[in-house]
Image (cartoon, rainbow, N blue to C red; front, side):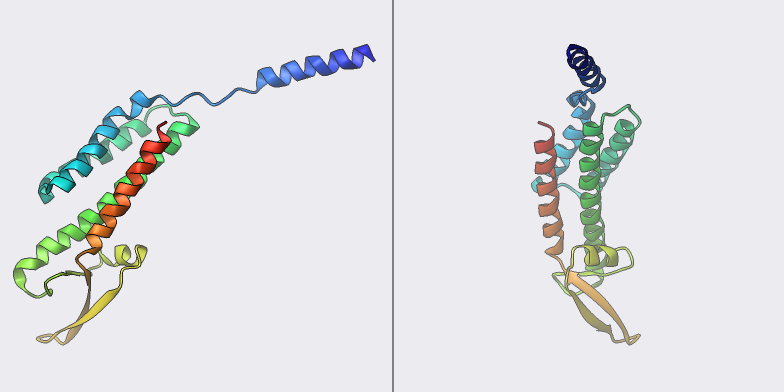
Length: 170
């Protein structure tokens, strides 16, 4: 009986010793990512230019790639994936912003609308934005548009994703 108990205790010690807990997240790996994400949010709210926003977006993408190249724990990888989601959301908003700016000077797209191109169509579908059909009379071709405030919906999603990131960093 004592042998069985002793054997059980020895096995229990080996099992406990072999189980290792997940290492804590090294927040220093994400310092630059967080700075860029915060700058994207702040500059967007402050009314930055389209060009500057694009530069910050490129910096975020490059830093995501740099962090991805490092050895990451499971928790750190999940945290990095949350930044990748944020990047995707900002990229969607950036594309809508591009089409809002590019077609405004021509007067073809009604005020308050964004032309739904091949680039915009997957975004409109992804976020379930309602589309409106229009007829371009000279060519008798139909085209679609989405509401200009669709960009604000995407920015709100980005803000929410950033809050998620801040929550997972703790």
